[in-house]
Image 1 (cartoon, rainbow, N blue to C red):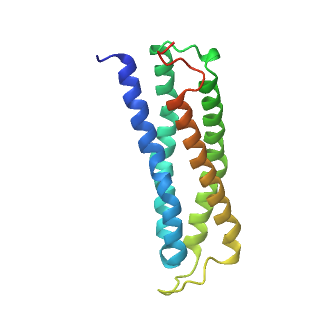
Image 2: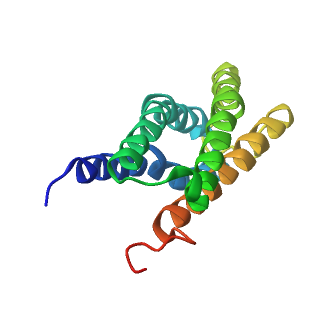
Length: 166
């Protein structure tokens, strides 16, 4: 049966999938950059563009769609610990993304674009001044992916909730 709850659920899941799904490919892209550093500037721009144009706008929409789910699903927010934990984690992840990850990505893109052209096959690794920036993006990006997985588990499992079987 079609309902507003179904509508919000489909949009919420689709927004989460499109917003956060690509981030799970970033470690693979990072390993490609390490093996072929001459492509690092363009691949870093691709990641930053996905984050700016897809992940950020949809990550703003996700909580509003979630509010639609809470309202139409008649969830008691204050008695749903799993939901409160997921919301707190989401807020923390959002602020880490906006205030740490996105600026770091922008700095990395700018630094890579300002570097002189490297010959094909030059695999010496990143210049030493970029290493802390790359480490910051890698660590925070991985942490955000782990947070998304924890939130997903909470949303699906809903520990402590009856889920219609009580």
